[in-house]
Image 1 (cartoon, protein in one colour):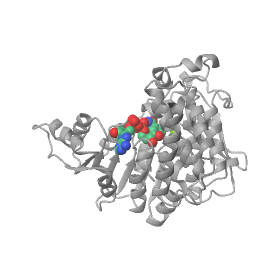
Image 2 (cartoon, helix red, strand yellow):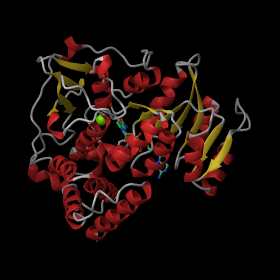
Image 3 (cartoon, protein in one colour):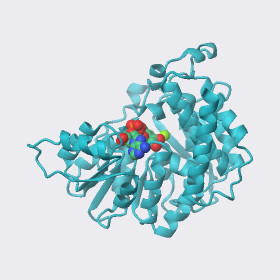
Length: 399
Ligand code: NAD
Ligand code: MG
């Protein structure tokens, strides 16, 4: 790969910060072309002063004002061009200079820009799983037509991608060869893996966000606690690797050292191991097909002593069951599942609903919208319209 100019969408988030860390280690291979953030303009300005992008994209003119004010007169580089709004985000990823797009905006809000990068045929480092969950077939189709290269950043999917033989590497969306028997996605089980079930209705957002192994944004941390995140990842794997649902398994592995596995028909199981640090997957995507330094430390198995595994408990984690059901039922259910979950998690983080109401809100929304047909979901507008309907149903239920 020649020199990469990277557009980092969601640069102030957990994945965005890790991405900038990896890019800064390789000034001979890559540079930041653009940054984008939705809030925290002070942080965005600090990032821009450190990595000198050509462009930053902010949501509105008030954010633009805050960004300009935060810019220091002693900055070591010129102030970047400041573009405003969601459309500017879509245009920026398609800029001719951009080679690579890190899609790390959280939630369905990240879909339009990720799709624009697919259409423009860029190398897409896909952290935003919601784009595949809600718009899988459209996204894969657009990426194929646009000639985009899709590299998974979610640690499980990066692990699977790394465990596939060279001739199996099929992203985006070509069916895996028949000699793959199963994709085995590992899950930590989150902070409530052993909490007595009777205590779950009282758990707080702080407890839910205190992930035992990974440091992540708040929304995905709650999703990890409910294991809805694992459900989204099953759907993501279904689209990325084009495998039937029966070939995707989930196993709970509390240490998060094995990031996922591929089982072949000869009985071989390939696993990717490492520290729970997203910079490994990010560096793999940025460096592909070569491996580059990520800053991640050694894996000391001897001091770790043991690795444990157990089957997921669907009574404890009803959200995982709901996600499998949604995938079996079709795309409309996946859109509703994701949208209802975003509302439920937001309300939980704001202490408006309890932790155990999250699956109830999702289930209610899926029941109410179950007659929506997949055939109508052939455009981003149609998907976003259903997403909005599901948000309304979920929000009404929360009242
Ligand atoms: P985060 O909440 O830490 O950061 C989100 C970023 O998106 C921020 O820069 C924010 O300003 C921006 N953003 C938020 N709302 C926006 C909107 N409406 N429009 C434009 N930008 C917006 O999130 P994160 O944990 O970094 O996760 C980012 C994505 O990566 C998610 O889709 C998540 O599922 C996925 N992911 C994260 C991890 C992880 O370790 N954090 C692991 C695997 C996958
Ligand atoms: Mg993951």
